Length: 99
Length: 202
Image 1 (cartoon, rainbow over the protein chains, first blue to last red):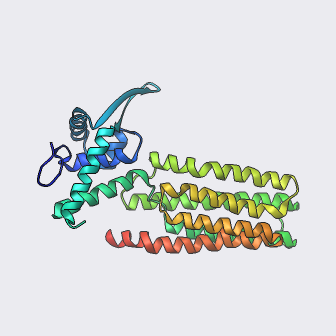
Image 2: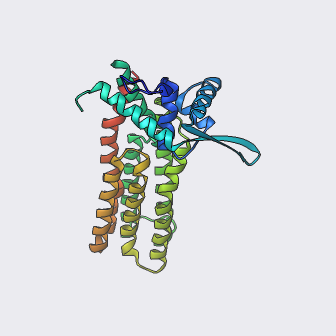
């Protein structure tokens, strides 16, 4: 999935996905509504990007009940953390090729 | 290239937004400091015997301390909520809860310990205990908000230790720690963060 020349990962090729990953790598787990508020996106938009990231196995979904309410929370996988770090490194390299 | 730069900037700001309580307002620091200074002055008058509410020194000081605490906290919450609204952030988030938990433990323990000191008759040590525990609470909270707050915490601890050594100067050091330092910190924070966002938002 990695672009050979730039080193950028196609999985993270969207603002929303960058946002999701940024939130998840610095938090243990984040629920859907908190994510929605942080990224200021619509339900449908967020859900589709989350699904895509889940399919790529960079994030995992945990469904549970908080009291009677269903609660869906997300966290990053080890693989996801590694790929996202590589993506950030690639971005930095593109901006400043000498480092 | 611009897009990559934008992406990185977005990643960084999102990470920060999701882990830090950035609504803490500088003005609330200044108000808290002013309230503390008024409180300290009243406490001075009460201890000198030239002013009293109930006629019993200890009761007077308790009531005064409670009023100062409530007014300072209310101002802090009010101005932070206002700032949150202004910068378009949510005031009550998971991070806010975490911040309260982090700072809450040393604050509650410190409060109880100060009461125990009073109960056991070690009046001279209460200012020291309050300053030290407050400083620890701030340093604890430092991971969840502007890091500058850790410096304030360290200063409070130093003052607390001094208050423990120079035991007769508790009230003075308390006034410096909770009054003057808060005002200085509030102004610095306002200049550094709030004024900038005020300008950006017109």
